Amino acid sequence: MGKRKRILITGGAGFIGSHLCEKLLEQGNEVICLDNLFTGQKENIRPLMNNPDFEFVRHDVLEPIYVECDQVYNLACPASPPHYQFDPVKTAKTSFLGAVHTLETAKSCHARILQASTSEVYGDPEVHPQPESYWGCVNPHGIRSCYDEGKRVAETLFFDYHRQYGVDIKVVRIFNTYGPNMSPDDGRVVSNFIMQALKNEDITIYGDGNQTRSFCYVDDLVEGLIRMMNSREDFTGPVNLGNPGEFTMLELAELVLKLTGSKSKLIHKPLPEDDPTQRRPVIDLAKRELSWEPKIPLEEGLKRTIAYFERL
Ligand code: NAD
Ligand code: UDP
Image (tube, rainbow, N blue to C red; front, side, top):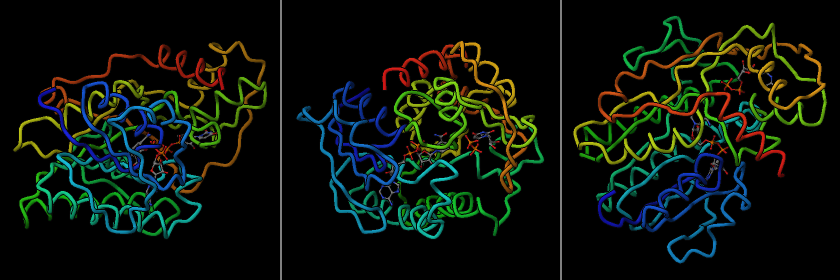
């Protein structure tokens, strides 16, 4: 993928970040992984620690960042609802100040910078499936707002740094992504269901289980992130990255039960406040601009993820 680059990845010890670090090293780059280890784990990057092209820096993006680099991927932010709701004020600050500090880094060393935005900017969408042109339906003061509005203002900052200072930006909106290196106690649906199934514990369906999500396997997502980072200069996004296959939580639970051969029973728990009822990306823009689309179907991705959790 072109000449060797020095690449800063904030949130690099997290689930998606650790896969991205690995892939960019494989492609011959130098990688600086910056993380405060709030939800990320050293275990995720342990296999990279002996690589002379890899550096780990324990740092919080609430503080300014001084690093010389060619590219920045800004992934630092807890992504699971229980984790981002644990300290909501810090979550909002992480999105806002994390964007300011990484954008200042990119501005000072003329680096290209990519923001990991999210399908949550669409909130509980009234338009289905969601194209990038949809502005969303977001509660500004609910329990998910620290994350949703934090990510929205981060997008605003990216586009204002671009217009005001000419910073070379890329914005991707990531839809529900899963795979190895998710923490078993992450709290998101795929890791919860797999862990519960493997331990023959009850599978916790929130609400009636008819809400939908579209699940993308992490290898597909990482390929999309790298393609976006290296796309033509005048393509800033925002661009959706996700797998358009749409499933209810009941369908997901049944599939996990089938693939694990588990004896777990489904039980229902209250639906969390503001839980989106439906979510599916329109990915025409990514197909056209990045020649990207996901290749790994849910069943195959789940098999790989189950194998990872079995090894833990
Ligand atoms: P994750 O929680 O596994 O990773 C986030 C990483 O950021 C962790 O390593 C964490 O320790 C680090 N971090 C958090 N706050 C920080 C701070 N203040 N300073 C420095 N590091 C900090 O989550 P993930 O699923 O890998 O998500 C990565 C990024 O992608 C996040 O920005 C998330 O919002 C975005 N995203 C993920 C998904 C998904 O489905 N996985 C969907 C949409 C967007
Ligand atoms: N969910 C569930 N059981 C769980 C965890 C989550 O039914 O043990 C539901 C949750 O209510 C939501 C969907 O699964 O409707 C996806 O939740 P997740 O936290 O993974 O991501 P997000 O809501 O941010 O898309």
